[in-house]
Every structure is written in C-alpha cells, then in structure tokens.
Image (cartoon, rainbow, N blue to C red):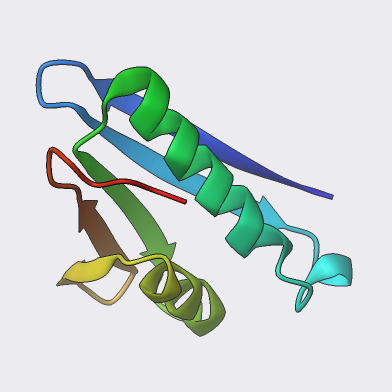
Length: 95
C-alpha cells in the first residue's frame, strides 16, 4: 500500500526528515494526509521536534500540494527536487 516514515533525526537541533510513498491504487483518498498528520503529531509528542524537512521530486505536484496543506513552506528548489520545511513554536498544539 505505502509507507510514511521519519528519518535523519537530529536530537540537538530537534529536527527530523519525513518521507513517504503510496501506491497509485490508493491516491485521492486522503490517506497520506492523515498518515502524515499522525506521524508529525507523534514526532512532536515523543521527540519534541521543532523542525521537519521533506524532499519531493521536482515533478511531483500532488506531493507538493499535500505538504503545503500540512503547513510546510518551500525552502529550496532545483531541477531535481523541492525541499520543504515546517517549523514549530514552543507552544504549538497539534490536533
């Protein structure tokens, strides 16, 4: 079906990278949005993450739209990938 994962945890900087993929059979059902919301929430609760970064293939517009919905901002773009970042304040509460 797919995966949603966290990696490259930097304990000192309180940052982590998020990534995922989903079989095209399941696209358009909101599954990745919900999965990413839960993974982000859990990373904030368990690791006190202040910054989450993601890398998206340059031509993957659906993934870019998804992370924008999740509150990420575009940090860097080149011909191969778009790097997105979401920063959290100390008192940010996630639902």
